[in-house]
Length: 606
Image (tube, rainbow, N blue to C red; front, side, top):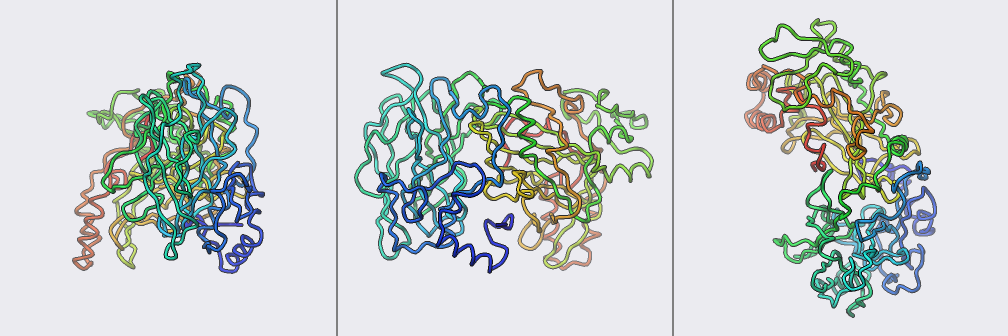
């Protein structure tokens, strides 16, 4: 069953939607039992999915009429294909990670506690869950919540004390609970029961990192959950609104400090805010294992991950500026210029061995296209047959996840186009620049090697998209990426994205043309710092200066050429949009390489 990418689970036609609706009513367990190997399960007696008779909170009043949107979450998303058997070695995909005295495991099976069909993203409601099928000796740390407008594809961590300290271990029962929020059911609300959200009260030296959710007003047992010793916690922040009612809102949570050296570990649970101005967020976990990245993939496992998940890029049918390998660019006449000696550029060696290494972007050097016009035109077009993806592998969330940034290199970035209400205009030279680096990032769980989300870089920022919302290539687990026309920004779906104000902005058009690139077949791992000297970085990666010359055109003059026939309101709107765009879109100067972007050592901007 195919879903339209970028429009969560909007089916391709009404007939198919009606058929799916009927199937979900008659055979609700089918979506759980078919598909790949993701171990997500909803224990819900009314839906027939993994019935847990011992959990009365999972029983939903069958008289409540659930909408299509709310039914989506009652069916677990599975990757299109089964996970492969990862090559053996190290702690990757072993199911349990030791944080230095606190073992954690990732649980994706849940018992539904409460659901509402109103509020939240798309006014589709949200559902709240407790983890189930918890491994022997492990304990719940927090509950899970998700909007109803997508199938269930969440996880939470559960913990086990392995400090050997009987009185001051890494986990301890709470002493009591505080009722954070409750909502009684009535005829005017679309909910399946009352709901009560409880915050554990920890003993001194411990922290609550999650909530307990019940459908009854009785306080839960203190055996239900565990609090975490303070030195195993770190500062977190809220993100991604899940649901809200009046002054009560539920958000996802993630470590505040994220990157290669950061030790914060995401729990996967939610945070509740009863005051819209409150900045108080429950802490996340912390990896105390002294930068022990034993759960990160080996070089052999990295290759297997790229083979399984390497994105397939589709280029617009009208694209003329395609990617190439860096070596092809150098071998076909790329020149290195030195400030003060612009008349004496030198040819760049195939691996970039004669490029200045390290330093900073001080304007002392820059790269440019070949000297002759004919060679310029040829190199601008790139060479798709020769193109390669360049992969940077780094730990995320304290080494419990792996981020694989997949970079493509383009010798040239074409001119931008603007949409002015119903009119599309070329912006002349605005947007053109020599060389373009674009990327997507795969976020993979180190507990089992499963793809969890993909980051699509879209010029100066981008967006994380859950694995459940992606388009995949022909039944594989390879995400599909659409490269925008001329600008090469990455998008999860075809269509038009507009950067601007209202109906005025810069167009980013994507379409599924005949040209594509499977990065799982054509890639090179250029950096994985945690592996030490095992991965040798190519010299061009450590070139800190610009990959193109500064452009000398006057943006004001270019705008006047374009806007001279426009009404005043449209003209001023276009001028504002263009002037607010970042330099990499304006094309005023060439970009720096991947290693000099903020996301190289940190998290992605979204």
